[in-house]
Image 1 (tube, rainbow, N blue to C red):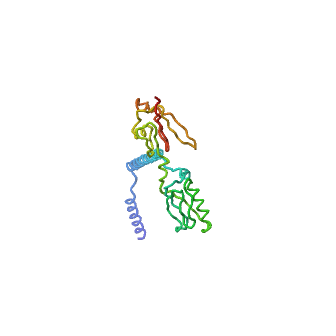
Image 2 (image 1 turned 45 degrees about the vertical axis):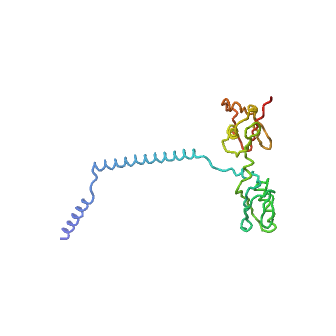
Image 3 (image 1 turned 90 degrees about the vertical axis):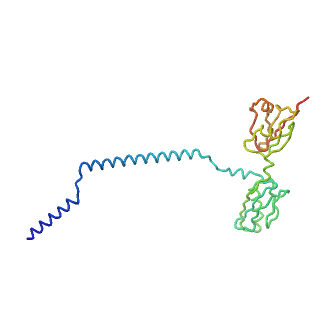
Length: 242
């Protein structure tokens, strides 16, 4: 009897196992292989797209202009009358002020009074203020921040003088040329010798001049001497000799 029961149990388990586990047929094997190949192709496409994205990113990075600011320009700037500066004293807000530069070139700072700022760089003024504050504040740290550069406009203006209908001084604009300034001044007058015009430019403390054939520019369209101007340039147009 026990032998018959064991036989029936084994037979039932074999039947259930055969139902649960389906043999892998040839068609199923081919389908799995095809799926694997499709996945491989998809992976290749993803890899290719990733490479394309990286190349595009590199291209955009190379075409993006650098916007780094040269801090040396700020350090070299000399403060002038009517400029507005902020005196910042670390951990001492009561000593931090924003003040204009007076006509005498000085600014007023709490505790220490007047300090010469005109004709000096921000770092030089900061050093002076810091040294004077050492008598009142322990280990002062001072920064001078330029908030308005009003005096710079006069230093950078372009001036045109001589045999011009309206001798003038105009604010410098990037890309400005000799022709732009002369036209803004109304052109030359009837006494001018335009081809003897010159540009005077200060560079490293020295003044150099460049010949401008203004007559060729105005009358013949020859732009060889239609130079780009720089801040502070002076254009002179002499009168002709009779």
